[in-house]
Image 1 (cartoon, each protein chain N blue to C red):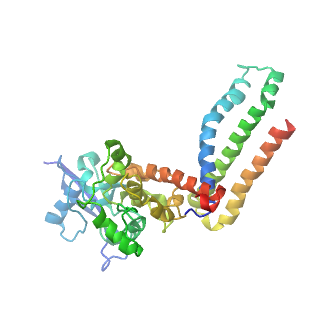
Image 2: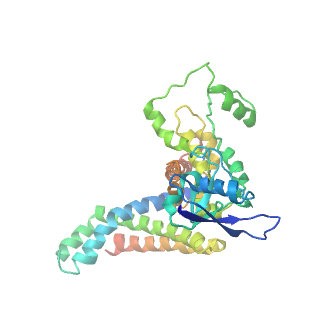
Image 3: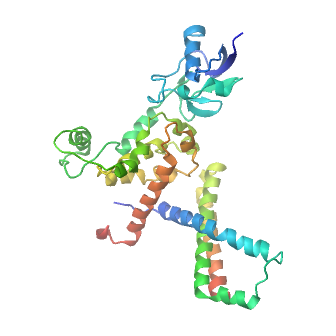
Amino acid sequence: MAKRQIEPILWLTFSAGGMAAALALPVLLLVFGVLIPLDWASPDRTHLLAVLRNPLTRLVLLAVFVLALFHWAHRFRYTLYEGLQLKHLNQVINVLCYGGAVAGSVMAGYILLIAL
Amino acid sequence: MAERITLQVSRYRPENDAEPVTQEYEIPLRKAWSVLDGLNHVKDHIDGTLSFRWSCRMGICGSCGMTVNGDPHLGCAAFLTDYAPGPVRVEPLRNFPVIRDLVVEIGDFMRKLPKVKPWLIRTDTAETGTAEAEAAEIGTAEIGTAEREFPQTPAEMDEYHRYSMCINCMLCYSACPVVGLEEDFLGPAAIAIAQRYNLDSRDQGAAERFDVLSSAAGVWDCTFVGECTTACPKGVDPAGAIQRYKLTAAMESLKAFVLPRRAR
């Protein structure tokens, strides 16, 4: 009975991204954005890299980043559509938003899975 | 001297006015008076030409929706003392065409509401026939006759009870920015009412409502602003109803993507 629509899938990534970002990003920001720069925590570099290179860490981080990027894409798309009344530019906006999310995801994947 | 308060009422008389104008009325400020009581005082004692809809005066009929100081309210549930010393701005509901003064044209909502089939649907007892005949028959004959009972536990009733409180006052349509932007959007109340039946254990019509609700003009137009729930005078929470249905619809769509047709 369900037609193959893309919007529900995008909404699922938006929804999951909001949840993942809300759970993971405050902790990551606190640790890497505040505690470490202020020297309140100084983890050993090799230990940190070892944690990062664990396949489980890579996968979890990749999921958080990809979902958060698609969350951003969906939200920004509707901000432009309705907040700025630019719905007539929808094709450009879609390419910009979801294209940006795909590009960011590829970059995150490259860093996490290959470069690291 | 008794206290008084000023109503700044939006007037629109299409035979005279090119666009709405504001007219001020000074009325007594009484403790138990709602904005609707104030308007009735104006109508009875000051200006009989003022037009507005009302009926029950007690938040049941849903007729007296209006914009009070910029927010959608039932005229009978907004009390003048809460706006003292005034003035109180009274305007028609937003997002609706104005017919006269505070009276708006609600045909758009009345056309959208039946699209979600807001009645109990039974597939096990339905006779085969045209959709319309079936709907008419199911709506009246199947449920509510003495031939068969459809018992329900309190927990099953809790599932939909909140959504059944809707009085079709359309404050949520007035509050919703998407309703103002997307004329095809089904809107908050219609979706909440659809959920009222979808979540009813006696109902079997969720599949029939699916196509309308899961279309682009159904739940997917909603961007979860949440103003509908803020505006609702009956605690219906249309925004919550829509989010719940988005998950239902998204799961069905996901199945459509990954499962072969016959397994759905």
